Length: 349
Image (cartoon, rainbow, N blue to C red):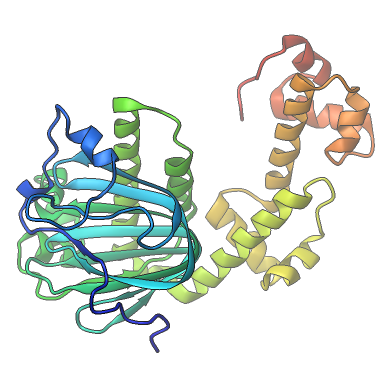
């Protein structure tokens, strides 16, 4: 595989972490507030570094979850390919993205594409040399980091359940960096969306993000252990790319959606691959996804608009008000008129 991103400049930013888990400790009194201010430039007393604008502009968040365990996520606009140096000794990380392009270069010179949609796992042993990572485009991602000692604690007494490479890592015997693309799944992409959509604050936010970070790690380790049974990672990535493009197109045109044949052609998949991939990655059929969008839009209009039920029916893609009423009854367990009379959201399916 040929390198697609330029190497960092000699004086490029160095994102640096130390080996010992003590350097990743969170002070329960004021550490969380400091961590949420973002990673700071490398120095003698600060073990994290990152500053807004290094790679691009946009929203970025760093959240410490426990000693040696943290998550970063954001949506950054990187207008030209940029690379930085990265040093994460004795650390496992899982990277998931739904937008943007990137490339990881290990200390051995191995290349790993981070082109979205993407899931990848990188494991650096203690004393691992500096690696490189580059990004471009509108990058929407989440990355979970966990130190070897923190992973030991997480799997205390159950490390025999881990893949052999992870057991070697926990024993401190890993000799070289592991960098591997993973098959995408709807669960992992769902975690990415959940992390970005989290509206909680304070400790509740930290607990929620911690649960999602653990979930991401579990899905990644499961995929790592059974990667041979998933088929080509590149094939699953092409399918996921097509499915997510189809999802965006449907969201724009759910009132009058294209046919399956037209949609499949536009996203570069066969009709059968699109339908299968949609279920695998998004957990529902194309028809059910369209139905969800129509019903949620209808619910918003019923609660917020004074227009007639017939007009709402046409506005969300139904030719007859009677068909719309039947669909709403099946979906919400109540008629459009009953929903409007309640003036509140019913339980979501």
